[in-house]
Length: 455
Figure 1 (tube, helix red, strand yellow):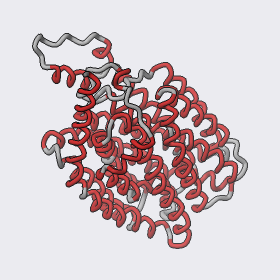
Figure 2 (cartoon, one colour):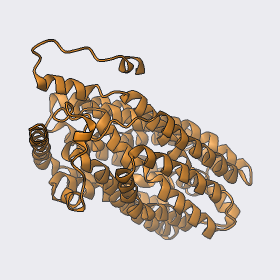
Figure 3 (cartoon, one colour):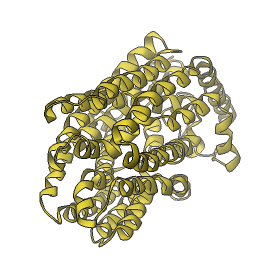
């Protein structure tokens, strides 16, 4: 894919309208595939290290004398710390460069991951795991904003699908392998040390391979301008706060607070161990089909959203994101409220839940990109991922951890993975009214900006 990008673009035929030329430039941003695969590799490394504690928690619990409540606190602390650090990393990227911020956040996560491997008690593990989360959180909002500058609107769903799908697919293969470390008393420490080192190397790789396209490079209204011109409009505190005056953005933020499916990533393996009676290594087998399902849902979903964009440009994305919530709720009901013999049945169900959860990034990211201006997307994703999603996840993790001790994980899963997800689908129905208007508003603003910058 990278070879055609390295060749100089063919000159357009004489008389080609400038709007067509701009659209072609927006659709063929240089180095877009190399950048996407570099960011995907970073996401794999970050996600694997970030999920290590969850994957090996039953083993860590035995070593340090922990329970479900401690797992909830670890997950919640990591999400809470992301509330200030997510926007802070985006701010750092605007004051230095997105390349520098991505490399630094990944390398620092490696340092704290190595330190977590030396933990001798829960307090040390909590501190270093939380610091690692504070570093890791910088990558996602920045990377999502970069993807919006690499691909135009009609190709973003596919790109996001590849970005998240490939990362999840590779992560799914790695997770059962990492779980084999649970056979050794100090296996979780070895895993943290090894992945910490890989994170540091990934930071170096970003510096060597990533080429920032510049803000707004994939917008057809701005593609004819050089990067310096496009960068003249800077985000301010006031403009960031204006995101909450975008009706569709507010709906998406409320939806993140209702995204109960996120809990399966924290307590899924623990559920199979403590409720269904599997050992840690056997339960972790379900992570493979979940990851494969997530890969298929994200990758296939990205292409499907592209088809819906052509057939129902005003409503297709909304119908799709609603369907994803309902599908997850239905599968989770049959997967967590009934007991089955053998890990095979759960592997199948976890795979279906992975598909349903994987359907989300390929549509919710393009929705956010379509309703926000280019210079605000980093902060828009920081607010979504590191504030609203983090608050929701923290509440779910803390609440589920302690309620699970009192009521059992199966009851908690019924309310969070099933009932709350159906409520989420209903709330997202508001987008049928707000989304088309917000997309037109962004297009009009970018056209006005083009005229102003070229006058």
